[in-house]
Length: 606
Image 1 (cartoon, rainbow, N blue to C red):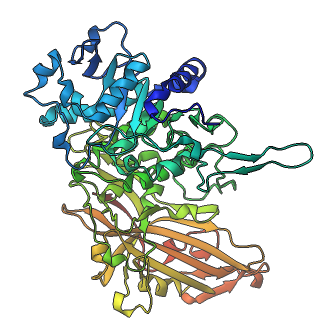
Image 2: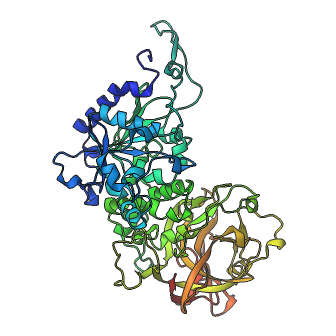
Image 3: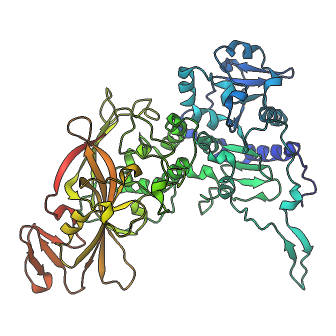
């Protein structure tokens, strides 16, 4: 099956030309990828022109009549100074000619591929962005969504830079099935196949060196087509196909009846229209701020955004200060695709639900995993960007609403407004995708003060969970009720010295399902832990809390709790006693709203 495949990857460019031609002629979605960005056919500021006599930098791309270009996605390596870079001092020199003898082998390989595919322009970040000019870097870095989405194709070099020529790969015949006995009508065939499962693109790519870098994440998602070199085979990924030179096509297209989110990174920009969401209609008097249209958009778009965040946070940066900017292109494309308003890594249309983010660690020895990347400065405390990244024991993003099947929403906090300094309320400035300084949100929600159990008093603890003993004591006043209330601090370094008391606010109270045959009801509460902000009347997020509340609900009666009389207010509807507005009915109202000391407030988070 592989006798025709050459040992040198770049020698099989006929296969690349075949994939590219087929994609451009037949794939509508690839030809219109990221079209909602409003940046179709916009050109980069600069690009390399591959002439017959050499290479030069072009800064006047708007004057070129027929302009199509490829882009390069690569790893800079541990010592970027060894690579040729565009600087202020070399800007004019490179427009005349670029020194070919100083180009790295991987750049030479990318140039060779580009020419072989019939193109004369190539975009490489280190040679098209002035590296020692902060203003130019900031301008160009904010245009990555335009650069990669408008490129005909992106060449992905999955391995780190090579000091010498790119080595030959192993014999590709070792990756293909060996036919020991062909199948006949009388007996089955016998094949020897590689042991390792190579069934999906994302599983393969996860182990590539380039997949550990944060900047390359948006390059792979935003490009309509990618050609992948550096692995065992040449691979092709576009919006509708993933294939390699040996196995052929692995994907029937994103327009199929199922979404292949584990196959291609590009699927993360698409909506999950087959997500199974809550179907029970809400009562008219339920306090729930989302409209049906908002909830539909939330269920279609949030799961993918959750996956995008988790994937991105596992990737490394040479400079931690780039964490926001390296994600801006993804945010721009996602906003354009789904019509969402970006707020510091989150979406207005997902708020306040998405405020329930928290990170879990599987290891019990998590306190040994000190943060390797501190959060960027001037990031709102309520954004997941504000949480440190722990590479020694990667923390996974989690949202409680996907751990259960929600029957009905008994309470959801309301987003009142958002705003940047010196900008109209509820409006986003052009720099919103990479500048979060001063961004605030105002919410209407219930708050109270509770106590946290000291860490030393816990017999066993894991995943940095502490016990909200004060909240458990308050919930214990409810009839036939048992609860588990936990608190997770956003910064692990604060775990060893938890506060004795903390102010908590409720985001949601959901009625969730139990296993068949259970005689218990189940409320699931989620909220934020708050501390005073730097300015008066503002608050900052310091953690996440949740409560699992179980209660008996016999089919013959409903228990009622009267807040004004405490435990003496217990009664059963089976007794035929009337109720008034102060009564609490299990499964119909929020538990948190009935607890002593809880007050509805309008607060501003910074």
